[in-house]
Image (cartoon, rainbow, N blue to C red; front, side):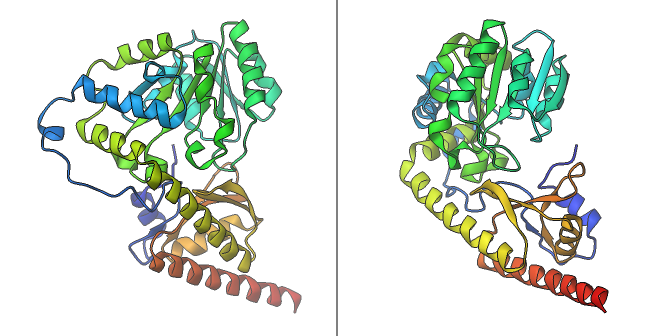
Length: 341
């Protein structure tokens, strides 16, 4: 399955592009949490259960879960998807789309008949309903009250609501269901790597009622989270000053990116402060033109009119994006003038 962030695929698509690529194909923060020297024991010893408890304590506090007993830590949220889908016996899995395609795939792996739907109300007929909130790639947000109403309907029939809040760190946190998971019938997924810019660390969380957390943890067994991930997770999640400052910086960067796109006639139709969602008839042409200049956006084979663009990091990346957009716009305008002749 195609995902953003594959430089090997980029080299195959654009073999003559200047490198290094400016990779804007993911929604990962380009300003990562500061690296620090790990204690040697993070690598030389098996992770301690007490250290894991420190991680789930701070995660519960930051995400707004009732307690650490409502938090299961895992080596990334991706590995959680089929396990969470397996909490319900095989039936009908409905995913509010268009969205991250791995949810449908994981539900199918768990034995469900999986399908995407574009009608929120249709989710009530599911055995397991899955919503990405804020949504990837368009940034759509479903209100908390609507989610709780849906959860109640599903719970009454033994069903489950899964809310993937991978981008809620930069979303409207009042709409999170993290504080509601003890009601049962709700699982909230939280990603660490995207907001903290440490995707390679592989750390994620499932928030749920305490019994569901125990079921998930039993599947992982001991030492599910590696020592380095424990150390970074504990320090970064506790660093609320860094988080507040980063949210401001990302908001400024997203506004800067919007202005740059607008300057060259690329309409921004949504997104979050970690990625922007654009829709235009010649999206494929823009993707190719920028790719040839070594700037990668995320394209979608089933939606050829839309693209997702992450944030540039260093000044040189901003300059290369601006230059590539200017070149594309110039060629677009030249072609339009030729048509008028």
